[in-house]
Image (cartoon, protein in one colour):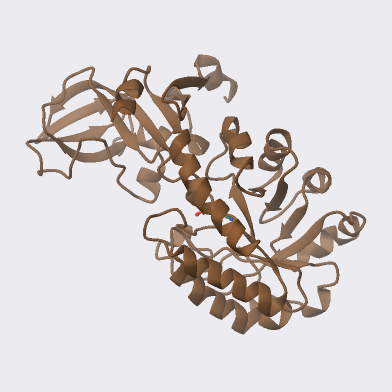
Length: 379
Ligand SMILES: *Cc1c(COP(=O)(O)O)cnc(C)c1O
């Protein structure tokens, strides 16, 4: 594709946010709002590149924040849109500020709710909710499963204090990760069984994130049916706060081959690091796709790609190519907008990749560049 040509000309390493791909995702999310009257909120945790917030604001209802900084970012950069916040625990000072800039605040426990309740009740323009833990999830990786044993996230039915609900207008659950509407359907069944009697007393229910809505095989119609069913049965407003689904497949990370060596196999060192620039490759773990590559052994030349840090495990993965790699070659990783830029770090004194925007007209614009001072300031 011609766009790839343009982005291989950019100085590396760099992230390139793909505006057209974002719009495609946002149109799907907007259609869910339009078919149900629900509100879709960007989970900023996944993607906070606020240069794009004005575009996002044209399609969905607002954002959700994990704490004061994300809430402030939304307040400054996505004006006149909803701002929700959930944090496992709020600090007193942060809470005062959150009351001024958020319209929905979700608590993780009854003790937090009781701690802030008096202050909260003075703000009649803010709605307050509780995160529940339905103790049902289909996530197999513990680090991403809020329902694993002894989880600190959300209130279980055993710990639910039904006499303390005055002032609470909604419930929130977040128990999914990259999953389909079928998982949501099964989750809702459990939420209803356990917490259904409280839903009649609520104004809203928030489905959290983890919904793979913009993936081609996602059953958007089933999601629409579930939302409409709940709205009608309990007279609820529904919120859904995808992160990944907003920015999935909406960006690239471009890197340059720095050196080629051998040790039992061909090795390539590139100017981007798994540990610093795509930590989910090591955390999840997962294998990012490189344009023009295949699984090892499929095409004639297989390489193990690694970053320029001194971490032995800074390995991006094994890839095969049609041609031998050469020093100076550019490689393009796909799906690099979400959970990448927000997770960047300068471990090993690694530079932060610059950020470009690939516009719908095919041109690129430099959004941010970083240098030595950005590394030094944090230390
Ligand atoms: C992480 C998170 C989200 C977004 O999750 P995605 O998997 O990116 O859709 C939404 N809400 C809460 C509370 C979260 O912790």
